[in-house]
Length: 339
View 1 (cartoon, rainbow, N blue to C red):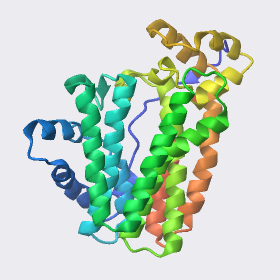
View 2 (view 1 turned 90 degrees about the vertical axis):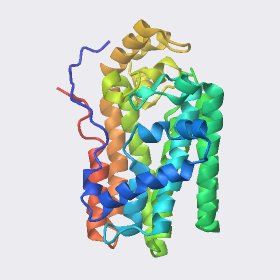
View 3 (view 1 turned 45 degrees about the vertical axis):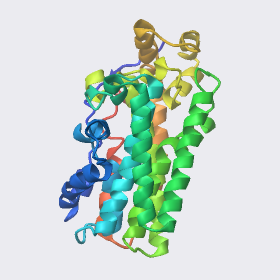
View 4 (view 1 turned 180 degrees about the vertical axis):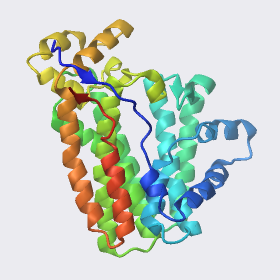
């Protein structure tokens, strides 16, 4: 194993300050919160408790933030339809968390009990389905284009999840297969958030396409960052157990690159291929963190930063372009660097 030293830094949540600096956006996000709760209100006290569990736990509201920024550029308050578009994408995201936590048997999400841990797997699955139904209802009210777009995105999310499940515990997973998975599992909803915002905001079609492409690049970047943090961050920094992907056989880009490293691959490979207990998980994380894989993954991220910046800087609204560019850059800030 390489003895390469790594400078460990703090890993804050994704910093949305650049977007929140846009006029009206903070107020719009404050208006979003009651809209979210209203959207999942069923009149059934128990179901309402389940469906608002993660809403009450907070979160970055990153996808609604992208949707609202794309819709208004911070130039004016969001309309009712623009707020509803932001609600629709956040409900899809929340539903995916409910379902992911069942699949992962997760106990903690956003530093609170996961829905499945508190209410059981069956309730979590059905509640996630309920959130998807509410999202689809909202999308339908916004028109056939948005309804079709959200339906297609759900298909991509499911396809990405299936390819990840099929690749579980496979040390032969390729970088191309990994990128294909995250394009569906993570980038699709980020891209759709930007696109729905642009459509509800009535932007010209060339701007819609540019914002859609920015969302795709940003989504890939977001997942790369998340996969690095799964290796190098602590439970407290993540709000969930660190190394969970490794333990469950989800071999992300840092792991695949560490396997390809002649210094660390021979030591790492025997640990993979089966679930890991805590000591094995810690050892595998240390091997990956001590390899060149983190630097290489950050380098891969910089390629997507450049693509995101090209999209952001081509927007006709300079303040929105600058805010999106700063947001993309921020994803790689604070990550570990070689001494």
